[in-house]
Each structure stands twice: as C-alpha cells, then as structure tokens.
Length: 106
Image (cartoon, rainbow, N blue to C red; front, side):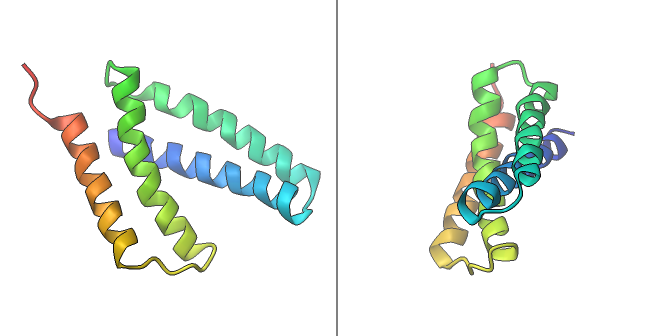
C-alpha cells in the first residue's frame, strides 16, 4: 500500500503542478489552473495516509519517488528523453527510498 500511496502522491504533485504550469506559462484556461490547484491539495493529503510514523521519513522517501516520477513524466508527457545519468540518478533515489523505509531499525 505504501508504494501505491507514494505513486498517487507523486502523480498528484506532478500532474497538478503541470496543469498550473500550462495555465501560467502557456496561457491555457484558468479552469485548468484551478483544477491543478485542487489536485495539489490532494497531493498534500495523500501522504498523510501512509502508515509510517515519521513525517520527515515519509516526505524524504517520497522525494525519491517524486524524482523517478518526474523523470518518467518528462519522458512520456514532455517528450524529453532521459539520458544515462537521469536513469542512474533515478535508480540511486529508488535505492535510497528502500533503505529509508524498510531498513531494520532497533
């Protein structure tokens, strides 16, 4: 369930931000911007559904997931092909997320 919530939060943050970007930077409809703002509110709520007890740990781990999703969004939506170093960075971030969330703690 943790992975699903991280993915939903990431898509809400990136998708909402993208809609606001389209409104402000590309002159698209105000309604698109307002929809983006509502999606960003959902992004603020979704991580609170995580079962991990530490706010800082959840948001730090989410940051790694966000980076991977942002690389994928840029590739699939903006059509900007990631290079080798983008992929290496995404893998390093994913490893960091796994360590932060699931490392044995005493």
